Length: 148
Image (cartoon, rainbow, N blue to C red; front, side):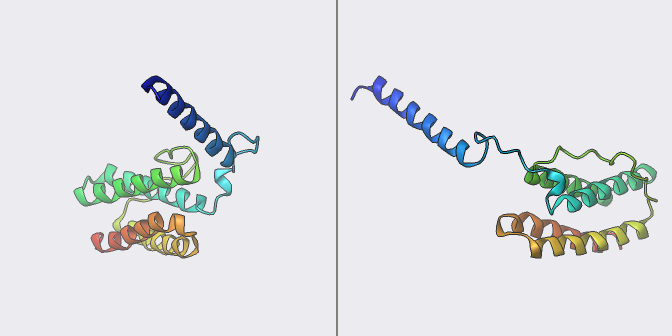
């Protein structure tokens, strides 16, 4: 078989495989995409986005390298959660959300609540989501110690 026919056949096989793959995932069968707001992880995304806003408020009043690292970790987790559930990338502060007081005690309390919710989500999640949720829960557990 000459090279041109082999290349053409390989391209056709790849295209056929892509069509079969797309039809199997619902993109070509007319089913609507699931609503990200209905995903069980949506509340965790909202909470994570609120944590980012809390750290933004704290950093506005007193810049701190440890707070910046924690804030950036939460922002990355929010992006990963949004991608996982198919939600739009989160804005730093949800519309209409109050700006929380930037005190360290408030951040510690928020981290404790967030750690509990991440651990609960991790335990309830299917295996395909457990790695990300375990990473989030572990990071939140370490944040409490960093805020002491």
